[in-house]
Length: 73
Image (cartoon, rainbow, N blue to C red; front, side, top):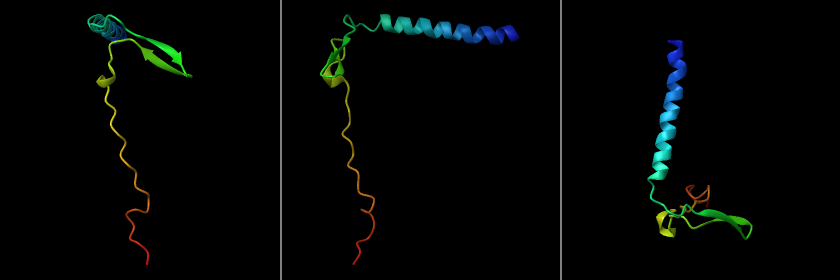
């Protein structure tokens, strides 16, 4: 039973590694892209991601902490 407890996590890790490799191989991207240093920051050049593929929501405006408090008269 002790050997089984040692072998099962290793087998699970091996299966997950194989699945990861198969997923990457079947992704269908001919140009994986590369990072280049431009203007002091790194920028992804090439690859299969178009600018419209990743949508970033606009941040919600923050109300000041006293916005809900009644006005003092």
